[in-house]
Image (cartoon, rainbow over all chains, first blue to last red):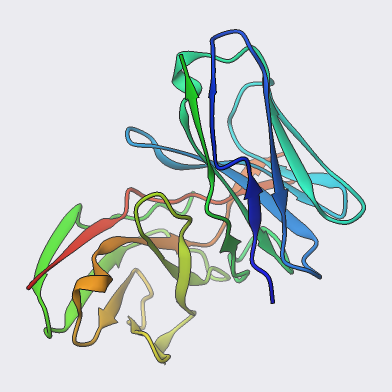
Amino acid sequence: KAGVTQTPRYLIKTRGQQVTLSCSPISGHRSVSWYQQTPGQGLQFLFEYFSETQRNKGNFPGRFSGRQFSNSRSEMNVSTLELGDSALYLCASSSTGVSYSGANVLTFGAGSRLTVL
Amino acid sequence: LAKTTQPISMDSYEGQEVNITCSHNNIATNDYITWYQQFPSQGPRFIIQGYKTKVTNEVASLFIPADRKSSTLSLPRVSLSDTAVYYCLVGDAYSGAGSYQLTFGKGTKLSVIP
């Protein structure tokens, strides 16, 4: 079956602009979680959507937001871009989602590499 | 907060068995241990998951001692294509207000030498 698809793969923006990234999960998966990966901070959890509702959230400012549609596709938006937002943004889908036990298995997309100039 | 500690990097020759140990001293009773592999400019890929004792699949083995305060990922007979970063993930941290978040450590960069 098809994997997790993220678009666009690469994009360049300037400070102050906003960006929207898209993630199409594996068919049947209702959970989509988003991550920011940078060389300095590693992989950091942004938030998770499950059946169109934000269920879990990491420690990122309100400039980072997201939503999920009825077909489970998800978008992530970053407003008022800063240089420090340059990163690889990854999304992952799973059937059960982020839970207290970590028993869920995540399937990641290839990521969207954002460069802020 | 279930925090993990792994070696920053490891080197191995092709054909050798590689063992990467992850320390998770404050693992919770319900926590599972999951390992992911990541190649440059790609998303992490699930390798193996376990709760206790030993788990084996076609790619790797996972050894978990009785106290569950550590776990060891074993890769048999590595090849150049196993050069990647390996992440150990333990449970999901409760971040308050009914919210959980996944916490990835820094990972272990494995370099396989011909």
